[in-house]
Image 1: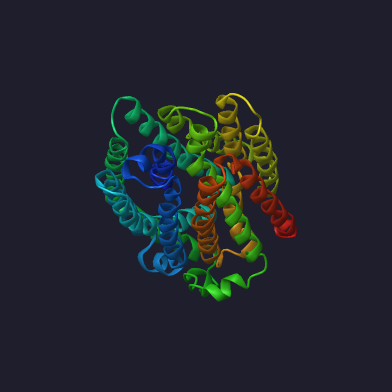
Image 2: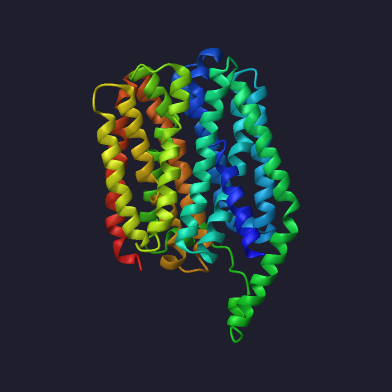
Length: 396
């Protein structure tokens, strides 16, 4: 039964990734049709992030009350309906309205799945599960590219993803008894392993935000997730626009090649799963920092847009091990009883970064140039590396 549950978690991670890269790949075609500025993509990202920050901070209590299975199904349904709303939206403001349930659906499910995997599976599985997220995030832009190159509209791409998301959500709904049964078996095993400890058999009490941020190392790891959000999401949201407006690539090709970031993340996490057998979480993060720096340097090389595409993919390879390694280390660094609260704060910090930084770059792109993308990414990577150096003594 554990293997079947693990397969469902893999599927849930694919479902998480499917819509995440759609906006970046479709935006070069969306904003002219709706008559808005190129920077307005940042407004949509901001609304989504507000919802995810809210649900992430509430996730400790929500998951305690509903359980992991129900949280996944409810969140998947909210996301699917939001994507369907994107496909039917007649104007920009309806896109903004649909971004609210999209954001609310993303936060709690992220915390629920990541905490569950961090507690019950090895780092190898954490990387491969996030690889599944990358598979979903890579499929999204290619579906959009196919829709655009075949003479269709960007709405068609959103339709395809919405229907896929609804199908996955239905499958997860019918698996709810399996989640409940596994939680009961897991509780029984914990009680048998710790027969003399009542506290071990009881669920951890939710922590307040003020209690969580006072834990040693939490502020530094929050900063890391904030900076990681800049590197991943700004490159994802603005990568296609960078290729089209700064490198001269046509819209359909830019939409498809924008997914190279997520292809790099996917391949990198597949490889990181094997590397995690030999290397620690901290070592994997350091490898990621080096690769990301190389990718940013390639972006600034003048010449063909294909060179920039390679740089975007290498940035994805560098980002690949950072996120899962930081999450997997949470129970070891902060304790199993506090990991759900800490991971909730980590997710919230990530989405605060998504909320603030891509919209800020939208202003830079509008009033200066989208060509400042590599500089923006380099500054974030520098802060990330500094925080990791301060966290180094806490890694086990």
